[in-house]
Length: 99
Image 1 (tube, rainbow, N blue to C red):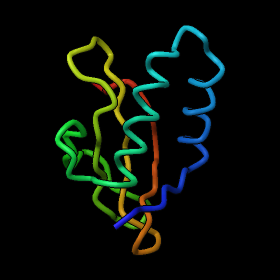
Image 2: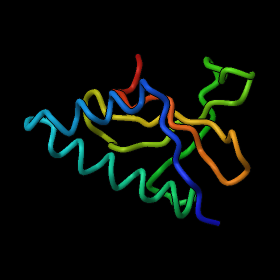
Image 3: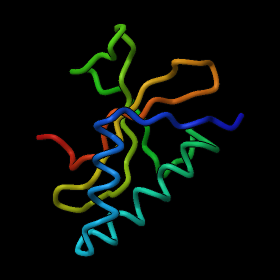
Image 4: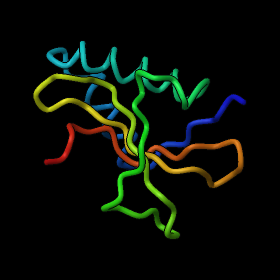
């Protein structure tokens, strides 16, 4: 089932910042690829999707992370949760992996 991606203000700013920073073009390409995969197949192996247990969504939802990069210092991750509608994913942040 195809998922619709809904971006929080934070995630929208994160993506816009990547789009306007020429030095981050490789990161932007990886993020866009990851977002496309998330729309089509959350079980795609390259996403390495798993629950991020130290955060909860605004209504207590489980937060997940998907990999946009691997084996890279400060590798970018996309943090998201299911909803608000059944066929939607809410992207809450696009950021380097927190330590």
